[in-house]
Length: 400
Length: 133
Image (tube, rainbow over all chains, first blue to last red; front, side, top):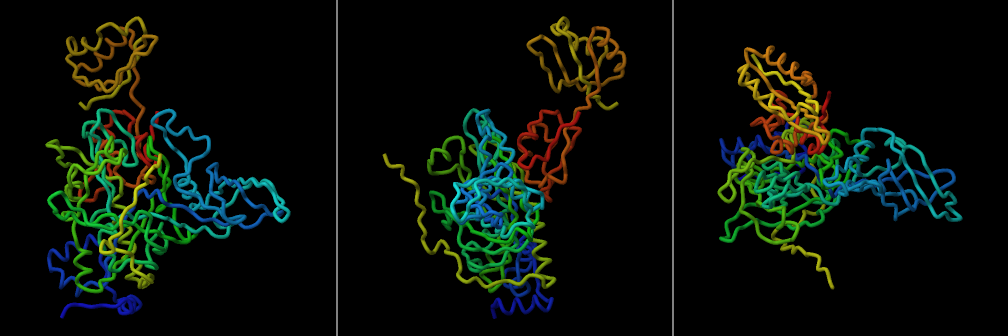
């Protein structure tokens, strides 16, 4: 009789301290030994994790009202502009925002040493952050300027809201040109000099529930060292299955998540300000998602290994930037993690940008929280759309 | 005897003379040039890895030629608290001093293999690499 579990049953076991929890990496080994059916019988929850740069991240802030009150029109935090086109003392600080005087790539390649992501890390580390604000002044909000310091504990809300995180899969970037290029996939050496990939592979959340059988709005997750939730699908959520010209299936790609959580219970170890030479500043985010083993199909997906998860190899010197479709073939995460892949007959060294040891630590931490009864799973309010919903990607047509 | 890394400075009047060649010919020393640079004022700087039985005699010869010698104290270090083992440095490091240990996928830094190219300082996304003198 095939196993069937409900969220209520799993949470009851968690409460009783009897839940059997494995990380996605551990479950690969279990299934290899015992098969999917037996593993599904034994295991209640599989935990996943990823720790990677996630540019579509940012913080909603409410500073509280000054005396006299100000209706902020321009805001800077440690010199980095935040968006304040909402309520008087509400603002949104984006991870990739740079100070107005940042030289960017004027002395190429630029360093992008300090941006929104670094401010977010400073805030979550409880460091004092300079807050500057300007206003055109109104009768009810007479104050025109403000220059002070704040800390995370002193302000009202600091709600991390990341419109696109936890990419289901990502490209493996190479450089076919004859000069070094600097991209969000790192420094890429000319003539297929190196290949960079960015995924936790078999530990990665959306690669382990590719059809969104369990992940949806309201799913409770590990976020930035604390607890967060899946709020919505992320921007550019185009869940699909990768195929080559012959129709061979190369596994899932294209899904994304929008996540939300209270910064005040997160930690600077899991929200790290990041700079990519020649590209920009961003935030590296730690996310972990528990997958309830509701049935065998869920376990089948959750136990896929790096050998059966693939990334497309894409040229970032021209094809990517010029939006030329196609790729140089698919390579498995097992091949990528081995340190060398072969493209166009050439052996190329590979490197990750996503920290697998940190992903492992997130999955283990989430496993510990659940096993100790400190973390219950939530049944989503609504599952996220999957590739079966046929979402079509739009591109931006620049009209003459 | 393990190779020593030394910094040699050549004044403008000797930087075009063949000096390193004599370390091999007369003193039978083994060398590895890690860095060599001549500035617009024709002053030369060289970082050399040098070893052999007549190492001390070789250094005396260099000093006799007017070359200033200092041990290499400049070094690249990794701040292990900042490093997240993302791996972005590992396919950039030309000598493999920064490399991934498998199967843990943790980044390791073997400073003996480092040639101070300092690419890692620029490329590390979380500024975990530092240079010290």
